[in-house]
Image (tube, rainbow, N blue to C red; front, side, top):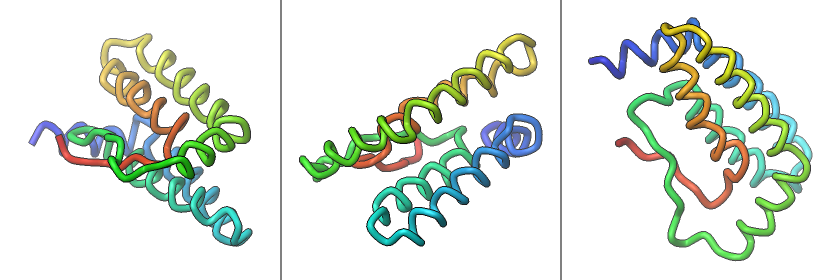
Length: 125
């Protein structure tokens, strides 16, 4: 019950909608470019994770191999570092107030996902 309340508050006040829309637009662009479809799938995973971060965690897939590693290196260079920085800045800004601390922690939880998304899956805790 508390997870649902936190997720609804996250959507309204914690920037969950904003991040999900941004990741969704990035996914559409990646799908349109065809070669970058794996990045689009990762962006959709991030959009879904950023909508409901409470009660879920990110785990590495055991079947991820060298292809995921190479794609993650490209992701970090092209987009991952500024996405992670955005989550860090939003998390710090939200942690300034006592009420915003859970939302700041949720943003910090999204940093590894934004930095290194391929070869991972979102699972319930």
